[in-house]
Image 1 (cartoon, rainbow, N blue to C red):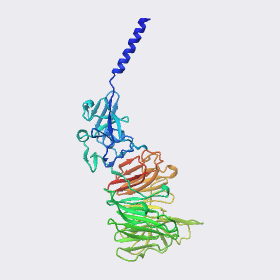
Image 2: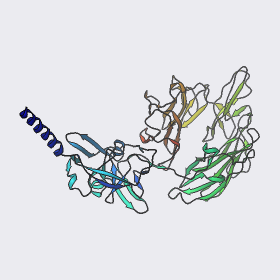
Image 3: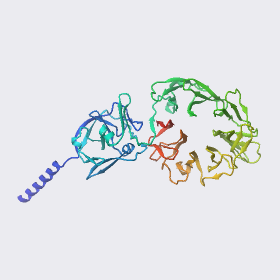
Image 4: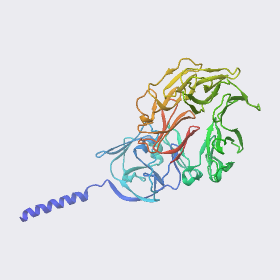
Length: 520
């Protein structure tokens, strides 16, 4: 019995000795802080305060989290093995996906991290972490890399700069995506938070609605400086300011708002010039476009009337009616046996001597449909280009792409002829870039984004919120409630993804090859 007890005691002692002497993969904790300066990675300013894996500082060196998305975003590939440890290699590819890892709770300024003791290799070379002046760290179960010149430049080939003004800027030269900026402007907040002032980017400036109905202009590179460029009037039927929207048209900042009642009021469009001045572009219900030598105006008063298309040369004082008096221009209109109705259209082009516009032949006694027409600016002759109905059309070079009243897509030559049907299924919206058609599936098919000719959604589970062409890119945002990986997706003219993010946005703008967005 005594011999048995002695054996048990020896076994317990050996187990305890083994556990106490097993080499730990972590050493003592070290103090780290959040950076007190800006950090920009591939053109994106990192918001550390609400990031699950913030950049941290140890011994005055900034450390980068080696998460899956962060690593690929800077062109790094990581592999972990329980036996061989961590392997970090410079990749020939980079990801255009930016994952903010946003959390609701604000980070503290000071934390503790640990120094891992597992094996580490960088580009095939072993790193003795315990001997490094700036060792790799472990924070929130993620390995952090020191962004020293040795690693950032020599090992990974990044462009690296630091200044008191701009902070730390790291760029992977192989990054082919767009730079992105989260817009943080003091936008107006009204109606208990249900209305947020609008903003746009035009040229080198932001234009946005601030408090008390003031429209401001601020330089993109220094938004703290602002200039009052327009003051919204009070709404005639209330004690608040009119509701305004902003858009960029042909590189010009355009302010739009409605004053008065629904039927007796007036729509205003104001051009906001770079020098801080403004000019009224249009008053009333109309679709007016400046094409350089000519300005085309489509009157869109309700109910629509014939003889509503006019034109004037730049420098002339008055608009001249043009077209056929039997047509209603710039409307999607239809008539049945018992009723007729429709809505205004914004599709308007001037190519050579021809205006391309939706039009409806009003005197028709039988059921009629809206179609794509061209109107010669010299003779006024109006010609329907195909027999199919149309509710939206886009011209790309010498081809017209359009959607009919049921939701089918077609294309036809610019001079008209037989239209070619592109889909045997209906869609809810579409756009075209470089003759590639992108469409939004019908509501009963998930309202997702597709490229024509491909059966798979570009963002599975993503409910499209907006889809348009900006600055030569396809820009799409998705509803925050979407069960999708991404909430923003941007593609270039070749159909290549150049920016993706899980950030839910209210608005996304592309200007001069840069993305601007404001978070929901």
